[in-house]
Every structure is written in C-alpha cells, then in structure tokens.
Image (cartoon, rainbow, N blue to C red; front, side, top):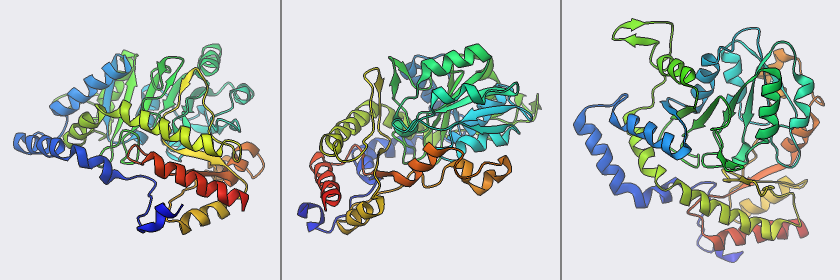
Length: 374
C-alpha cells in the first residue's frame, strides 16, 4: 500500500496523457498533414476511418458522426421511430441512451436490470411490450455484452428494431459476434474516456442495412442529396478530420488496449472476488472493461480509504434514469425498478486503463480488501 502514496502520485480513473505519449509523433504528423491539406470536414481521414471500421467489425457500413448521442438519435430517426412510439431500454445507463428516444418524440420505457450483469434483464422485457413498442435500445454496460440472442428473438417475435448502445463496449464480443454488429444499428462514442477515445467529441454508427446507412448519411449532413439540394430536414453531425485521424492511429492499438484492461480486471477479481460482487464474464462473451465496477454496501468507506491513498474512484451511476427529474413526465417513482435502484446505491468503479501497472492494480485491490476487513 505504501508504494502508491510514497511519491504522492495520484492514480486517476484514466490517464489520457500516458496513452498519448507513445503516439504523439505519429499524431503530430497526421495533424500537420491535415492542416497542410486544408480539408477539415468529411475528408479522406473520415472516409478511411469508416472503411477501417467496417473491416474491424466485418460489417457493410459505418458513418462517422459528431457524438455517440447523435449516433443513437440518428439511428432511431433512420429506423422511423417517432412520436407516439415506445422504445424499451435500461434505466441504468448514461442519460444519452434515453435522451435519444426523447429527441425523436418517442417514449422511453424502462425495464429493470439483471443484478449481476447490470445490463437489461431480458426476462422482464416482454411484459413491457405494448402495441406501441417499436424498438429496443440495448446497452452493453461497462463493456459487458447484453443477452443478444434473447433480445433478437423478442425483436423478431414482435417486429421490433434493435439499436445497440456500444458507447462503452468497443471491441466487446458476444458469441463471436462484435457488439454493435448484431442489431439494426450499433452506436459508438469516441468521447476521450472511452476504450477508443478521440481528443474531443465523436461518434459512429455501423449497420448491415443499406437503407439505414443511406438515411443516416443524409441526416448527418443537413439532408443534402446534391450540392445545395436538401431532400428533408437534416442535422449537422459530422466527425471531423482531426478526430478521425487520431482515431485511425488509436484503432491500430485497440485490441491491445482491451487485452490490458482484461488483464487488470483479472487481477482485481482474483483479489476481490470473495469480498465484493465483482463483474461477471461469461465464456461466450468478451468483456472489455470500460469500467471495472463492483458492488458493495460500504461504498463510502471504501471510497474514503482509496482517497486517503490517493486513488480515484467514481460511482456510475448514482441515480437511475427513471428517477431523474428530466424524466418526471414518465411517472416513475422510487421502488418501481428495485434492481436498478439497489445497484445505484452499491456500485463503484476503480481505475482500469491500459497504462495502469499491474502492480498498482494489485495494490489498489489490497487497499479495498483492507477496507472491507477493517
């Protein structure tokens, strides 16, 4: 334990500077090339990045967008989800998941989570399906793939569209299939803290459906069907050349980044597995640990001891969406979704990023173990 605080060096939740260091010369050259070219919007780097993403996911289409939120929103628009429709999703996620539903005028319908995976409980979805249900947004939370076989079976049975929220799961796999490549559309965020993070905002939509691709392609650029001709009202949601160039460089390393995250997770679980409820990982899935999130009933005590040892921790998420003021109009109340509410009271996330030394991860886990025994 002493080694962590000996030099008063903090252990952050993420060290973006450490990840940048070995890439900085390649990134500097890429930025110089862009500045020299004068092409900043929908240029060759965006096109190449989209092509590289289709190869990575073995999927037909990919479109760079301004954010992961826009990817969700424009995917719903392209799937013709509109006012009066209902879209089922989880309340235990970042607000962008449900915001996108509200943006298109549809109604978010929250289904409680599974207490172990923290993803939507597939056994509770069917009871929330009504004649107005048109789609599901499935979140692969913290990098853990959701139960896609069951979800796709329900979608087929009730003729529902499926949008995968992969903001936290770039590189995760479900039964050999990439997260994001199973439903009608997969949506990714490149916010700087993500497993594949830009140096600003950015997002991506992938799909095998050509009509979805074409609709989002037009929607992202003001509905432009030809120079100064607009087929419908669109939006301004374009991934810029600078972010695309940076993401192209980092994409080459994403599998190694994820491998290191998984190794750190093994260290945490090997030490903490008998003391707290650690993340679960099934044999048929690849968890990419955007966060290492465990459950405990003494969260505040552990957080305080970690802080005393100069180690960061964060609660994702302290209030589920159905209890947020922004969604008061939906009429949910405390007690309606008990698993999500219990998780909000118990979860905490600790540092996990590729540059974290395994020895420090072991030390962090032992600090937590000491707090649990103390």
